Amino acid sequence: MKFIDRKNEMARLDALVARHATGLVVLWGRRRVGKTRLLTEWCHHNGGVYTVADQSAESVQRRYFAEAIAARLPNFNETEYPDWRTLLRRLAQDARAANWKGPLILDEFPYLVAASPTLPSIIQNWIDHEVSAGGLLVAIAGSSQRMMQGMILDANAPLYGRALEAMELRPLPAGWIGPALGLADPVEMVRAYAVWGGIPRYWELAEPFHGDIDRSVDELVLNPLGPLHREPDRLLLEEMPPAAGLRPLLDVIGSGAHRLSEMAGRLNQPATSLTRPVGRLVDLGLVRREIPFGESEKTSRRALYRINDPFFRLWFQVVAPHRAVFAGSADVTRQAIWDRLKAGLIAEVWEVLCRAAVPRLQTLSNSDVSSPWLPAGRWWRGSDPEWDVVTCTADRRMALVGEVKWSAKPMEETELEKIARIMLGRPLPAHLPRQTQYAVFVPKSALGKPVTHSGVRIVEADAILRDPSTSLGMTY
Image (cartoon, rainbow, N blue to C red; front, side):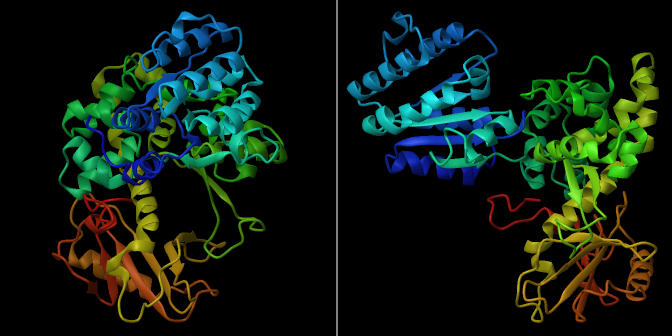
């Protein structure tokens, strides 16, 4: 698959090379998100050296590292280095003699640290002295988000405050899945994103199926021989430290337990014991914490936890409960289970995409809205009516409330009118501004391209995926 997007990240990395920056760059993100592809593209365009660590003995890791460096600095691999300090000192000397400024990339850095726990301190001293003196640009990267963030964001860590750039690589925006999989219809893009999320590796595996979502899901995920059939288990095991112990939490959240008390009840554990493991899942980007719009993150007692990653959500709702069935069934049985569950999965992702798009939607701006919309959330309280989308302008003068509906077919005028009547007759959250704009989010309406209907703004999938800041005009 062609290298797509990452323009902002690449621009920041290229800017360091352009200004002959000296020092450390740190990049992290979950596995499969495209860190290696970004770094190898950057390395290739700027005459750098890319090295990647693996889980091996410290001496073996140094030998492999020296072999990679020898491609740029001849004869570097002809010495057996007794420790990292000696190797790095020689590297800085040879780079200075060759007038080579990098970038030097150390990918999967946590594997090196696992074998040599003192390495961050050694790297710190090296960056502060030899690297700064020689004008070398060094980048370290890793998929163990907890370890990478700890080495950079923890005030007690050796590398704290040393990074010229500390960058978390996030999943690709939803709109890019269209060109990646050859999809032109925004509705089909939403369907595909509901399965694969923004993970380029999954897009790469799905690309040969030419947009056939049902067949790609069956072949890659549902089939026990598929390469993604055990994907979440592998990803949790590859974390450092391994996160396999978090699997039961994902199981119960995926099966509908969204409150800490519900999770605790199903796992037969006290709710207080789940705070830290659930927090780690949030840090990993696999789970999101939701509170009603307008409530405090710190004091709200109505938090809900939902699986955040679309692929993980699919896996824990479709594969995890049915693995025994899938192991001995024909593809028609697998497909029947998928057909029964997929609409709900797509609808949930569609709702998340709609909320995320609100702050930049031009279709929700008019002469009455002079201040930008804040990030949107949901609203719920006891038996009060629930709202799918709630926000207000930054100046707190106008509120936006909306309903999100998923339909495989274009929404007819009669359906839109019914939704509008219900919305306009519903009580609003008391803390919102009195001036209110209503919106209904549908994949596609049968009305063409309306701006408003029955006093309600209509927002379709093409607007949700569109963003003029990208060359393709699409994001989430």
